Length: 458
Image (cartoon, rainbow, N blue to C red; front, side, top):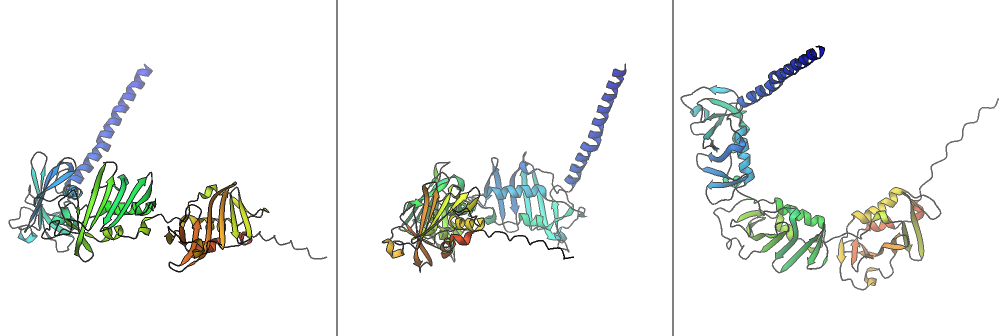
């Protein structure tokens, strides 16, 4: 009997809890949604908008949604749409706010700038229904704009920013992407500029120069350039439109081809003659539209070969270094790693930060120039180097770097590493960091504590 009473009480509590949830919590959510809905000018969801027209006193711009995310400009015809911009228009339309009503069913809309509105936004939704929002003049305080919807004669206030979101030119809504590509998918890059050819190939995470020389490339520079290509946008479109020949694109002055390894297709940007100061005519080879771009892309593509190549002084895995040997003529000294410390052969501990700074210069500093086909080493003071540094792991040499005489152009020090025949010009600071006596790296022992004071004599 007692069990039946407990079960009945439990059922009552469950029912009561459900009632509280439905009336208080869920009811509160519904009331919040209703309140938010009242603040919106139109009751429509972005996903349901299939067509948009921006109707200005002197022009109309219209677009229709094709598929899930693609838009097509229908007026004026023949232009590619920037689908992201049109999606944003649809999102903004669904979010237009409605503040206080300033006039109910006014006979004359002239006072509100709505007889000939600054912009009328017409949206067609799924099912064929059309909804309009008219934006008029600003209120006296310039904080809001007058507006009305086609389903009501009332005039209300909306944020002044709302009107600005729909005040667009056709250029704002056109596809301004220079190339359709994802930089991470590119595995080869070619630049043809007159008689000059530059070719690069990706291998794993690294890039290799193939033309005009075969050597390691500066992967960070290539990644940066491809990122510039991916996010480049047309600055404007020529008015009146010009054909490829007039724009100097047939044949082009420059051709940049990025191979999309994922799609197994080339993405080619053609660059023509100057359109105006610091701007060029250009086009995607797969599209007809001629546009105008800033000078950034052609200027980057025309950089000297040295900018594209790897300027690392020497490849060195510092975690493998167990010993560093310093050769200065007949003088030889060395330091060894002991756990996380560096020590002299006699066991004296060295200043860790100074040794680390020496290694940091090799890891992070870059060569100022690279001479791939050097003359005899005496030309650079490298036949009898004034300083040599050898990095060892056990009995194996990991790397060796020799420092020669000073270079005047560019300013620096000639150096040669054991990983190739090239002579490099490096900054004097790198030489100075290594041109120290190992005794100067010894850690200064802490001063002994002061002797205790003697008690006064009795």
